[in-house]
Length: 360
Image 1 (cartoon, rainbow, N blue to C red):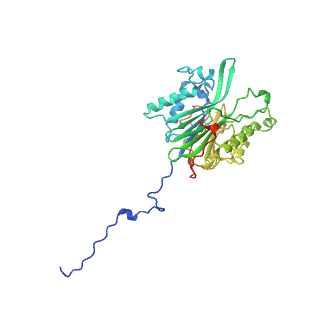
Image 2: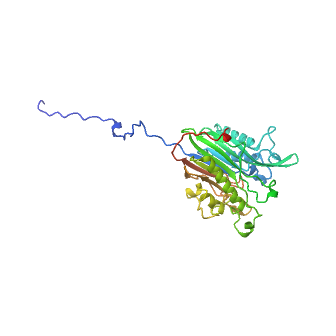
Image 3: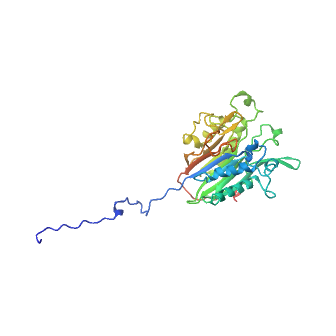
């Protein structure tokens, strides 16, 4: 009809017209870097089946299988009580080739495990030797630490494999050569996706010395030894002297429960944050609430993961108390691992040159 009114067609708008526009001229919102995961584990020389007297191939395979089954995979694995080569490490598990170390043998089991899963083994292993005990020419046993790095996600910038930091406190000087040496392993790592640097420290503190009067004056001895406090101070001084403003994590077997003098020192004067306390898994004022180790009838919380500024703890999933039958790590050692996921706070990612003494 010629007299009918014509209405204009509605304008069609693109879906993008209703979406928020990025500010500051950016073409897209930035993605947050992915979190990272760390494990600390005292593996007792992979000899728990024989009460630590000899290393066997079975525990190596089972520890490898347990680590490989974690999802997501850990990016850093810190191990304590790992040997090089000795009578104890070779008596039940003969080296496949001359000079094969315990860590090399374990990494062989890791490769086998990932092969069975149809996956590529992503870890590079670093060994930090602490002490060597010999009877004439026979190597009775050695002690040391190890760090496994997931090189798909992390790049190793520096480490102190050649000269781990000594932190042992010798309360009785004439027994200096007989006392087990304590060290701190250090690695400076770069997250590949954004080149963000951070530091990893792995350590194993001494047991409290019975030669101090204070040892016999208190019922709760673990974490209260004068030698342990000296080692904790050496540890914090070493870390703070290396890290500057960069984030760092220290983990290991501290032989000290929460609420002990060593734990209180590290979380107050040492300005460290406990991962388990940060996510609410433990009460830092309760020393026996979450055992990580067991010996005979005793249950103790001796293992910890701490961090300095720049690290935000997200969760401790897969961390179970000692004796938990549901854990994939049950029965593999006299310790249980601590598994923790964390984020690195955003900040400057400029790569400053490391000290020349720590260069690879």
